[in-house]
Length: 150
Image (tube, rainbow, N blue to C red; front, side, top):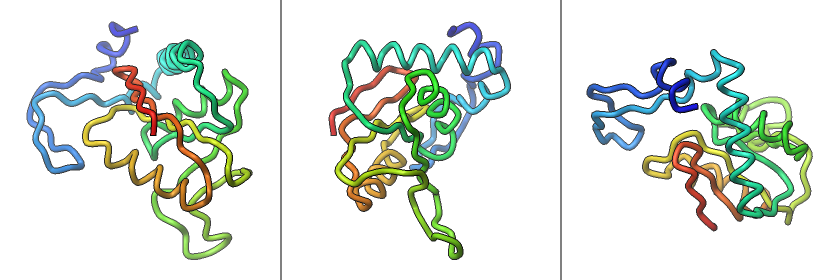
């Protein structure tokens, strides 16, 4: 699977700036795997295997916007677990919800993130979920199979 990611230029060398403002000589762009349904499916399946092996307990899957949404969608489908979606910005019209989907406050969410650098995107997403009364008990960084109990 790593060779498939390489062929899609997921791993890039150069001078790239992260959301945190830090410069990095290596950039990991998992957004590119959406252009290969097979690679995206394989990546999601590998993530599901890690989730199952760790025995994680949760009621919903949430992808950290926006790069992890395709992965979370596949994980939700493969594991047959409902998915919720966190908006990056709350709309000023309609329901004005920050969290989309049907959920019960007090239930638990598994966050799916594509690549973890500073953890800021995960923190922002977890905070929005907690504001809606949801528990965030596990966070996953796909590339390195990071598991953090929150």
